[in-house]
Length: 299
Image: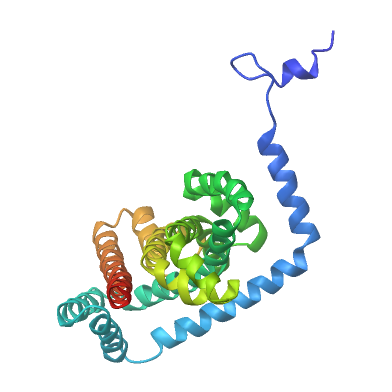
């Protein structure tokens, strides 16, 4: 007697098995075969952008890039952060991880830029449309709670191993805070200020550019900070699929049980994370101060 198909596909708990994974696998296969040309074009663009950015960071002498990044820190917060940045970069060069660090920095900058280009407009749309906000909320919850490693599987299937699947997976993983903080910042803008703009005959676009976005900038910058931090964490994980940089060094250390290499690469990641966090936080603080000064001037 033939066993019913439903029984064959039952779970250990005796309930019918839902083949969600099979459906997703079929969907990925269909997308890959249908939009293969588009994915090839995206891959070429991302590879070209990454190679160009990596050349800018890795091509010049070490001291030139280190001084340039220290100047960024000086402009953002002051001489203490600039000195700390310079010392940290010298340490990275001293443990022979400079090339990997610049590869990782290029990945973080590119992935963060793409994530923000997608996230900020979505956040603006969600802030101005409650229906869009309701639709995006569960999608963003899914994006933030799904384990980071899971994003690597479909991206490797679509783009194969290398730097591109790492960038795409990083963008998907990191963009959710950018959407949330942008929406939150715009919704926190005082309605009376917006109504005053309408009263003076300003268009919606002008109100957005000259009133809402400037007032929401501190919150948006907090979202930018979170996007960059998540990008850095995901870029390291992307080393498992062949992405260049410190992630690859960490994976090699794990495979070879090389404690010294793992510590040096991990320390370099920490230094980069501290630099990026302090700089973006400082720009957010400057935006908050500028808003307070502007409000005081109007008062």
